[in-house]
Length: 302
Image 1: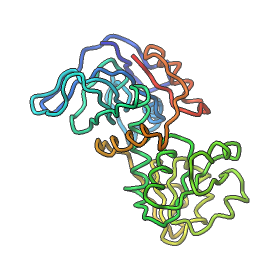
Image 2: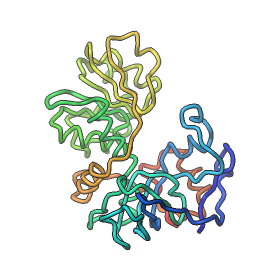
Image 3: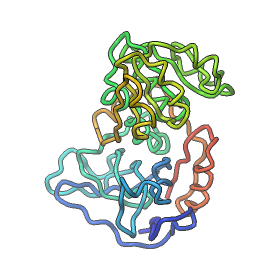
């Protein structure tokens, strides 16, 4: 099969499109023919080595977390995944024509979604949902600010928080306020506007997807005992305030992924796709994704 192999840390030029062996599947695993995957920031962070202290890898490695495709074969202990079934999941090694995943991480793709639409969902939607439900543990009636609300993780966090009955504020840049108004949040805040951030107070929680100085400016807006949920680790200076920080990393959850995909299929929220590119063009795709500013994800097809 053809796949993208990484033999050492570095820039996009280190990603090699080449022939490699088909993966072997075990008793509790499923062999999936990849129809589409997508690029996430963690992909180029792993590639560059910037997260090697907390996410070490063994070379050569095939990157990619979003699995979307058709079942080819299943292990002898696997039931419910017939050949040809359309599946999606948060997995590993998806920059390839085929990959293997544990059966319990796979969910069926809702009929209304194409492979490409489904490929944009697994990592960002599970991260967004888990930021609200596992890190922040938001309750109905509480107020949460979602930073980076127009990103895939942020859009999902806004959607999930709304469904939990919270008051949701979408945090974005000033130039993106009009677009953010379509998220149906209870309010939109320009995080690069000092007057608007200074007016924030008594937030029960912040679901943070941005980090850096942005989250540091928001410490004073969080009530005593409030919480920050972050996939970016504990922000510097948080210990100086009476707030709790809940760092987390997204984990596979097939049933929750199906629910989120079904919400997307019913157009309750969306993860925009900016471009669709070929697997063989992964170097250029990484360069484009790493620059940012696309307004959506890059989906990769074999």
